[in-house]
Amino acid sequence: MTTVIAFVFMFGLLVFIHEWGHLIFAKRAGMLAREFAIGFGPKVFSFTRNETLYTIRLIPAGGYVRVAGEDPEIIELKPGHHIGLEFNDAGKIDKIIVNNKSKHPNARVIEVEHADLDHELIIEGYEIDEEEKLRFDVDPKAFFIMDERETQIAPYDRQFASKSPGKRAMQLFAGPMMNFLLAIVLFLILGMIQGVPVDEAKMSEVVEGSPAEEAGLQANDEIIEIEGNSIATWEDFTAIVQENPGEELDMTIDRNGEEQTVTVVPDEIETQVEGQSIGQAGVQRAFEKSFLGTFEYGFTQTYETTRTILTNLGMLITGQVSIELLSGPVGIYDATDQVVQTGLMNFIMFTAILSVNLGIVNLVPLPALDGGRLMFVGIEAIRGKPVSPEKEGIFHFVGFALLMLLMIVVTWNDIQRLFL
View 1: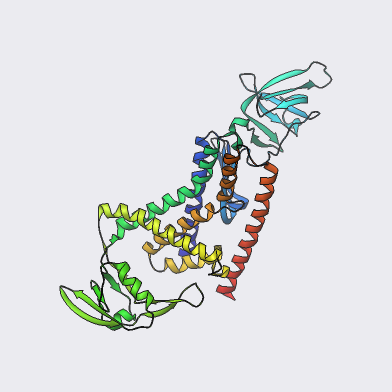
View 2: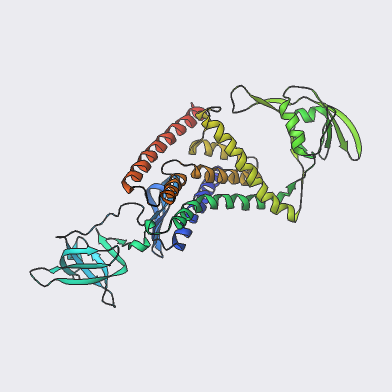
């Protein structure tokens, strides 16, 4: 149950922060955000506030913010349509009843001759059996009512496409940006609670049964030399250990002001790259409380995590690592289960790493992702005119289908690896 709660909280936080970024910048740009959704599929819970429908959906595979104009609007008034009209106190149309007009006895029924709900905000037409053409102004926040469900109209100035390339790009970039900011905040929290890692190769804990314990290393020991090479930082220490799996390493340590020499044989650990392994001694880095260091730690850890993920992504693209190593929701749930058992601090760090990963993946210029849509905004900025909506729509549709196929493959790999 603890793992389930942790996974739901982590998934909800990552998706909420990402989509909240899209939502905030959509509203700041004056776009009509129709829906803010966490998950896909059938609605589990929903409410409406400030023009936006907020939903939690059944399938935990992401989320979305649906902005007016990004997808074709469902309702279009054409000549010959019979519709019902209701008016506000200013005499403007505030409700357009598309069907089930008998349920709205106070509505004024007309036959549409012309309607412009993008720019002029007017509807022209005739009452039944009347010859006089009528013209009505439409309130910018009027609603369609179809099957007794309300959908707010979207004048062109509230649509995604009406905004400048800069505003559209910022709205698309805001989601990944919020994931990076979340990672910074989580690393700051880690720094405040557990402290920040010291620069020196000083250890806070020695893992039971590890090569370090067998060699006699203890908490608070500081490595100052390995095989005659001076060790100034923790990175110096880990680099030599990782490069020498299974090799005897003579280490000079400082223990309470006295120098001693021990011999450590790092364990050989398989990496994700086929045929490669690294050494591991089994020690944990020492930490210290530092107000200024905490803020630096939040940014530097986010940067280092970003660099590591980009390196691994490059290795995936070049075929150095297999697609079988990718994890979907099932694999992430299993990893969450393992991390939760090691404590809150590791869970916070795991969440921060996943947040960076989500930000990076969404910036990759692939169809249906933020990066793919940013690519089209960039092309428009260079060309001076947008790509045909039909072509862009096909690109994203095909890309989304391929992404769903990839998700199925990755999830099947997770199931095989964990259960079969």
